[in-house]
Every structure is written in C-alpha cells, then in structure tokens.
Length: 385
Image 1: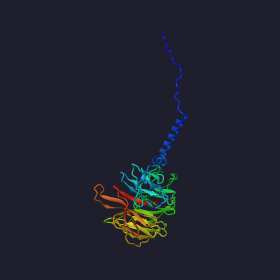
Image 2 (image 1 turned 135 degrees about the vertical axis):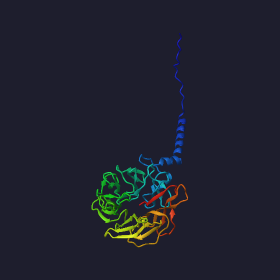
Image 3 (image 1 turned 90 degrees about the vertical axis):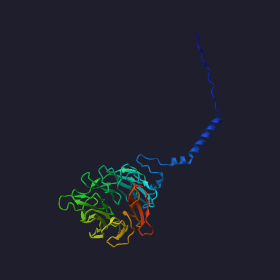
Image 4 (image 1 turned 180 degrees about the vertical axis):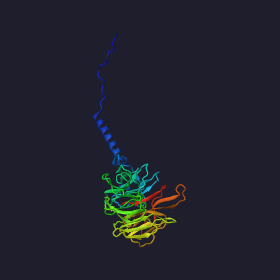
C-alpha cells in the first residue's frame, strides 16, 4: 500500500515593510489623540468616581451642593412629598436648584442643620442619620429608637440631642461621630416628644418641656426646665403646659409657644421668659412658630389669621409684616428676610390645600415671593447656617 509523502518544504512568509508599520502606528496614535480630545471624553475623565456611600444627585443641581460652604445663609432646606413620600430638599434662596437630598423610600419628617451649615441630621426608620451635604454621604449614628421632631444640634457642633424610649424614656445626647450616647434626664420626668429641646447659645444648657413622672395631682401639669448639658442642676423656669421652648441668640430669653384650651377654642399664647430673673412676658394670646431676630430684640411669629407679626422681647408690638396663610417661620441669619410655609385653599382637586415655601423681606421692601410651586406639600423651611 502506497504511503502519502508529506510536503516538508517551509511555507513562504509574508513580509511587512518597516515603513508600513511606522505609518500604521502613527495612524493609531492620531485616532487615540482625537478620541481623547473630544469634549465628551474629557468630561467623563474629569468626573469624580462615586463611592459606595455617596448618593447620586442630579447634575443640574450639583451647584447647590458645591457652593454650600463658601455661601452660608444662601440656601434653604425644606420637606416635601412631591416625589411620592416625605423627603428633605435644598434650594437656593431664590427658589432655584431644588434638590432632593435624601432619595429614600422612607419618610423623613424632621431635621436640623449643623451650626456650620455643612450637615443635616434627620430621622429615618427610627434611627438618627447625618447627611454631609457637600459629599452626599450619610452616616447612621444610632442603634436605638429616635423620636421624630426631637432633634437639636448643639451650637458648638459637637452633640445632637434627641428623645428615645430605649434605655428608659428620656432625652439623650450623642457625639456627631456616633460615640458617647448618654441619657441626660432622670426617671422623675417625661420629656414632651412633640417639641425639640433647645440649646443655649454657648451649648452649656438645655431648655425643654416635660411632665412629672408620678401619680400625683401634678402628673398632668407640664413644666419648662433648664438643665446643664450633662443633665445636672435641673431647674423649673415656668409652670406652663404643652410648650415649645426657643432659646434667644443672646442666651437671655426663652420664647414659649403654649398650646392652650379655652371653653370655646384652642389657643396659642406666646410668652418670653427672662432666664436671669424668671420674669414672664406675654407677647400675644395667639402666636405660633416663634423665631428670634439675630440680636434677640424681636420675636417673629404667626397668628390665628396666618399673618406674620413681630414683637419686642418684652412685649412691645411692631406693625404686621404680612397677611395670609403663614406658619413655620425661619429668620435669615442677617435678620433681613423670613422664609415660611405659605398656603391656603386651592382650586385643585388633587391638592385642595396648597402648601408651599415663601420668602418676604422683614422691611417689606418688596412683596412676598413664592419659592416653590410643586404638586406636593412643601413645608418646614429653615435657612442654612
């Protein structure tokens, strides 16, 4: 049987001239340079790499976050349910760049600013969260139940105050890095969890409303207390029920909004207590949402008809600032403007009561401006410190 003879001749190689290789390399280099020089690629290369803890913010609103530090007092935080649930938003003082800061499926119903205006503390799912508005990084500080509406950041920036039932119902403080959780009230009292406590400007004392924790005749009679920041030396400064204390910037006065009940209606008398001698001054029979002027000489508040009024710290009355449906006042840190929740009856079936954010100059030099016009409820505005 014949065997097929294999061809052992070497195959002929194809040779590429060096000049051609050089030309190909030059062409590739030109194409790469052109691609990398395009505006789109440059933008992508310059974009920061997101981290696992950051929250994405829409690009058209990045300017709000990036300018917080150098422009204190130029932004306003508020709560809105325009995206389906209640979340915390931020906008420029003229109403532009309205930004959802929290982006969660859970309601955030209350918050407070850090004194330097770079962070916001809020409650989500019964936990205390701190959001850095410069980086959009969230940090959970607690593993205990935290009540909504009780947050208060110390003016020195070191601690956050809140109410909790975790280790016995009371007021607690925690360091802003999550350490040092401490209960500062005793079992003898039950703090009112409908209102936040208020720090003195030097962060050394705390004013709060509470009820005696006993079965005696005074168990349902609320009082206003002042104590040291560690809970020591607790004193009663006013025998007033259902009250929200607001410390003045000077530290000499505390404004008290009282929820009272008369035979015919609920009333909201507004008092000021002099811390030095415990003198009480009744400013009005109906005054809610008190907010101090920066120099502590005036108190701004709303009345039953929705108008914004201003009184001197010890009772002198000034002209009404505006009429209408106003609540939840916040005075700017230069004392020239007030941002507030505004609203009233609406013709919209989907939104029968209109709740937006408005701004008005204290000197009435120009009309009130409506800053938000969303389809949801916008409320609880506060100035960035």
